[in-house]
Image (cartoon, rainbow, N blue to C red; front, side, top):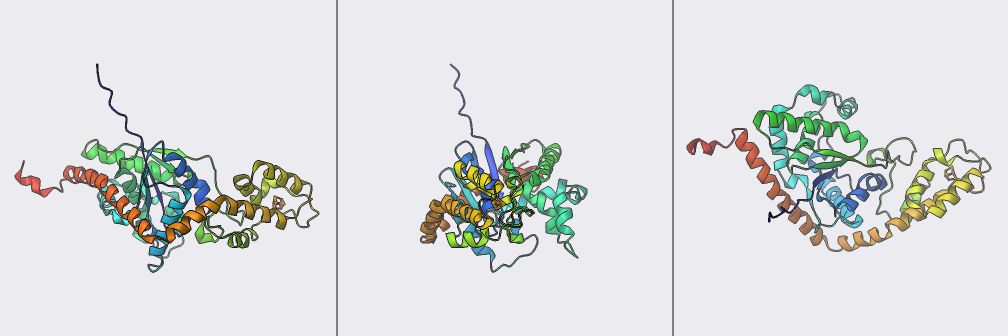
Length: 338
Ligand code: SF4
């Protein structure tokens, strides 16, 4: 009787830049999904600090932002017993592999990336890190030979480049890297409190998931609503109001129905409607705030989780980088063994 091989879970790499505590957009667009995926996949969750410095930033603030994001990851339920949680720069093989991928990555491909075009337009002198950003992303993913990557629509182009880098490298140096698939969520674009741009810390249109209820209210009360609802007596249009979209994520179904009906009937004002939303958001994250407080009271636990995660990630990273270096002729000691 032939023995059946145990099947390995598909490996997924997920990365997020350390901009401090996660916000609602991070949660809805990524973290919630990562938590759901951790039983089905072999997961690596990476705080990508090397990416965070590509456009400058304040070095004094970065360490705290890294730890705050780690606390958010753990508070929402990422379990270090189920996956590997680590900081990118603790595994220097990421930047090493990115450098080696530079050998097979055409500049033209990098220059046509939409994000590069958008971001570089803001610089007088464009840092090369901005151009190379997707090469480092390819290295992040391929270092672990990830089978899949959860990405938003805006990252799809970078993932396609990762697949191309894998193909090019394999063609020159021999098959090694799988071409990772995109796992695209169905959340769509999560708009910020301005109701216009994607939720993002740099735009100041976010609500942190671990914020205290009074902070949540202070943020939510600034949210832009249906612009046609000028007076309380004007009927509103929930379909064009971002406050309503957020209700759909955080309020109970009965509350969502009631919000829509009262809005259309002009029987509730926007301030009261936002108050209900703020309460729903605070209630959703109450258990996570508790977990975060518990973790912050024991910083040694956070440190241990990140250091242990980096050690485990490095074992996988070394395996790949050793083969890459051999195939690219960088293992000079082999001159005596051939
Ligand atoms: Fe938006 Fe609520 Fe105001 Fe309607 S009542 S416009 S859903 S904030």
